[in-house]
Length: 360
Ligand code: SF4
Ligand code: SF4
Image (cartoon, rainbow, N blue to C red; front, side, top):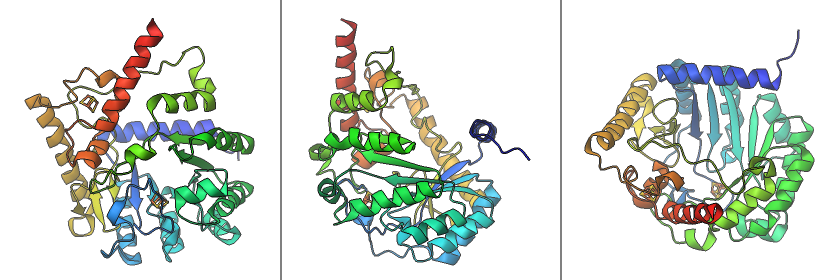
């Protein structure tokens, strides 16, 4: 029998997503399996939740939730954390997800992936591994992860996964500490033939602590010029101009939240996304279908309020076409959905000025 090509799988994925979107059924969700982590990154947004004392879901509870997700028709799960591989029962969970027929990926810092673990990941059919890779040298790696000898281990983890022909991608958060290494990481990814993504946002911690955000963030221009260097094909014939945001002025949530997406935290609470710990619906007590309906209602209430009252702060803002704002960022920064994010405002102003300059 002929094997399905990458393009065919992508097309199928798109088709299913479109169908689910129309019917407003969940498609891809994020499942935070633990807030525990073996790293101590200065840019981590988990704040006091990391390695917290609240009881997290046990194996059986997670399996029950996976049953509920199957009933809901969820297609793909991104297992994340904290560091999901710190859970001793991680392979029991992944095997169960595999048995239930989910497509699933794992977001990891890679530190715990040795040859044996890589074999096990292959065996349980993890379809994609997203490894955080913030530096190409031990010193910077250590500064951004809080562990010693991490660079060598994560470098080897990426190679072990590639050798097993697994789908691996690497990603970096661009900070003032590693901005000079991004091009080297990009060259490494290119050399290995794997996708590389950079993120220019240092998020405030859950609970509002944003002490290090300014110190670690790089400005819009610095980030843009890095993007131009590592994704030159995206900017061909376009100068520095990027597409304008397509956000609507009367809608707080322009993403998949409440249409095809939600997240579950390590306490079994269904939330809008991993950045928004709201509305905290206990999925085991409420049941998957009812929880999803409640979550959709909450999203609609927020969107409708913005539409009817016209008090949606971004909806009335002239900077909106230049602003990459999202409700999650606002929520982390201010504890509310409908408030201006200082971080994005700064970026939007920089972007607007750059466009004006370009036009001259
Ligand atoms: S690896 Fe991720 S979860 Fe762990 S400390 Fe770093 S950013 Fe936080
Ligand atoms: S600058 Fe502030 S108010 Fe304006 S769109 Fe961005 S986040 Fe919203």
